[in-house]
Image (tube, rainbow, N blue to C red):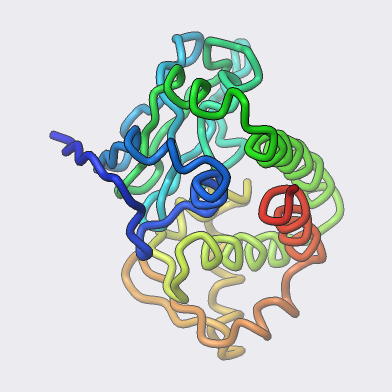
Length: 243
C-alpha cells in the first residue's frame, strides 16, 4: 500500500524544480504539500476522469503520459520528472484528464489538491507566469519530439534521453531496463542493445542489471542531438527565469 506523508518543506534530495520555483513566489502552498510514495505502474490519472490533484514527481520518480488511439495500441508519448507537474489540463481549465498517466518508476510524488492550489495562486501574477511558461515548455517539447524522431538517429535520441534522465534525478546513474528505454525512445530493443554496447566500448557508460552509469557526460552530450540543448534552454527561459 502506498504511504502518504504530509510535509511543510521540500527536502533538498527530493525536490521538484517547478514546485520549488512556485514556492518562491507563493509560500502559502507549503501546508498543502503531501508526499505520496507510489509503486511503478500506479495510475495517477485515468483517461476522462476528473483531476482532483496536481502531481509533482521528485528525483526518485518518473511518470509517463499514455495515449491510446482509437482501435490502436497504447504508447508513451511524453514523460514527466522533477522538472514538471502532472494535471496541467486542470490548470488550463479542463477538469478531466484527456489521457492516462502512470507512474513509470517507483518513488515519491508530491500532491496538491486542485482547489487549494488554484486558491493559493489566484492573485499571484508571477506564479501564473511560471505555470504558463511551463505549459509553453511542454508544447515546445512535443514539437521537438516530432523533429527528433524525423531527423535524428536512434543513438542521438537515446543519448538525449539519458542526459534528460540525469538532469531529472541529479545522479549519474539511471535505473532503467533496456526494454523500458526502447519503449521511451520508440526503438527496437535489439537496436538499443547495440547502441548501448557501442557507448560502453567508447567509455561513455557502464551497464549493470537494470542500471546505466554515465561515465563521461561531455562525451554523451557530443553523441546527442541539439534537441537536448534546445529543450534545456527553453526550460531555463520559460520556467526557471520566468518573471
